[in-house]
Image 1 (spheres, rainbow, N blue to C red):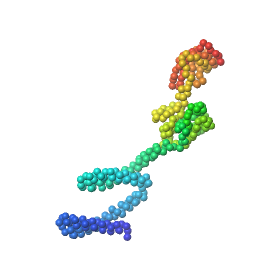
Image 2: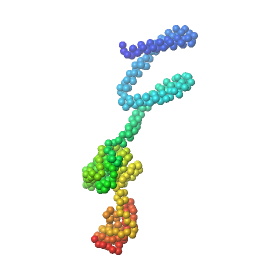
Image 3: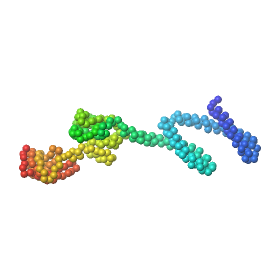
Image 4: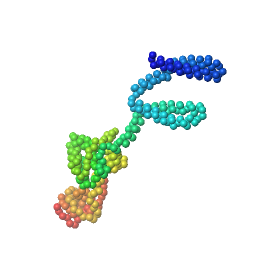
Length: 356
């Protein structure tokens, strides 16, 4: 005997009993013979149970089992979560709805439970990708600050970008002791540096190898800790963008001399330590009227001018200095001009010039 035939028999019995009981009550209310009405309703119930029971029991169960078997795990989890959320919402709505006058107070709570459960399952299954993406995003925010970067004792880390490593001055700055904390070189920065070192262009290849040498110097210098970390930023391709995102996650500054990275990081609220700004800040401060000695090495743009440079690279333009090229001359500062490229000093020849 098949399961469906068994359920048909059970359905006939249940529906016939319900039909008989309902028919008897109905016959009394109509003033008819209760037994006759009950018998007729019992036969109708038995027939209805024989026909309808499979559609109410076995066939929906088979369809449900088939759907569950073919359903993916994310869809199944989403459906269960949606059902739970829907039933919770229905439970919150059931009590106030039950206070409505009859028959609404008795019918609407049941309808509300069915609808909330259905819509909960439907919404969570249809929007499962968005829901799981949202969950991953919040989970990532909780996990990312715990990335496997060993924090220094003082709790400060500094990210290095490719440009500041190739520049090389970071090694000299580190030896002075002004940088406090741990220097972090992400793996993607080191990969970019290796790519530049393997370039077919000789200039780029030389710059890349220079950067690798600087990293080697920093590793040998024990005055400041340096770590190369394998942390990466998913979903971001550009190295500069990865550095900015990583700096925001770790809440640490970026050490660079790249103007574009400097601007982008500042717009996103990331602290930037710019080596060029540091170099300009520590240049010798000169005021008009002060005397200094400079070696004139070339002619200026204007007639009679000579140009020399201080030890920090500051350009000095000397009036009437053309006749003293390749000489150390004493000059007096007349004007100091601050430009985007740095400072420029204008001077005139002093009374006492000392040839080199």
